[in-house]
Length: 320
Ligand code: XIL
Image 1 (cartoon, rainbow, N blue to C red):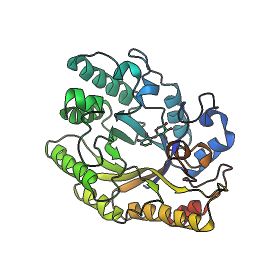
Image 2: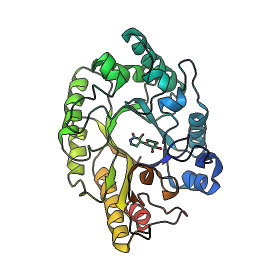
Image 3: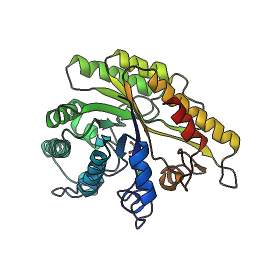
Image 4: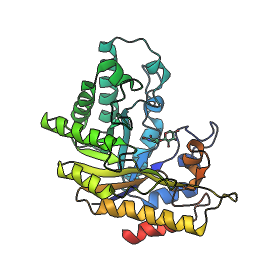
């Protein structure tokens, strides 16, 4: 009943454009993916810009391949994501739509994508990163909230639930590992929506952590308060980055601290009753998004670029 997952790299993303897709081209990668995990999350392949590249065109190829792979390997899938401010196609962000049209575009997208994989997705990140770090709704950069108002969030959950009544529907965000303004905002919104009978089932923390900052020591208590609301919780995108020395190779001390942090995040989840899903955002540095997005930081996953297991890998294993 406990799921240990990884993001599945690929779909044309932070890696160079013509980089061969790891999922289809790297045999060693695929083998580990199939063997070490019982949950998978498409890193990019279900995002709007990939799955819905033109208004009247869906491209399900890469997402289908992951869902089929998961079925063959008896893995569950976390769907990611339906309502987000980022990685939306240009036709959507630059389009000139009336409110009615936009609402219909979102409804149709959710119905189509969630409906296609109905029965095959364990958890959906329905609303991703809807609050800023101060706990304010993203009323500027999130097209849906900006154009349609906050009520659209509840609608997204309702549409997803209609399209797949079995899928567990989540709020997902970063910088919400601790009890802070941002996680408080989710706590309040969850309470409101639950009181209104909106089908919200879970709250998940991405957990993109950096060793530049401290470990979120109240992670377990924070997950617990959402558990107490009757929600499931999950860790969905864990990676732990660090400042690399000149050599590019982390010191033994850094490796040890990283292993310790990985384990502490896992232990926090294991200690909370309905935290049943724990996903790392890629398992090898070879395809990690970290060095591309965070200048000077790296080595954030549990395996080196050569798929060598780091202390973090063994630390996780010893807690499972
Ligand atoms: C990242 C992917 O890892 C990259 O490949 C992509 O270029 C940008 O997005 N929060 C999320 C994820 O919800 O979708 C993001 O994934 C990382 C932060």
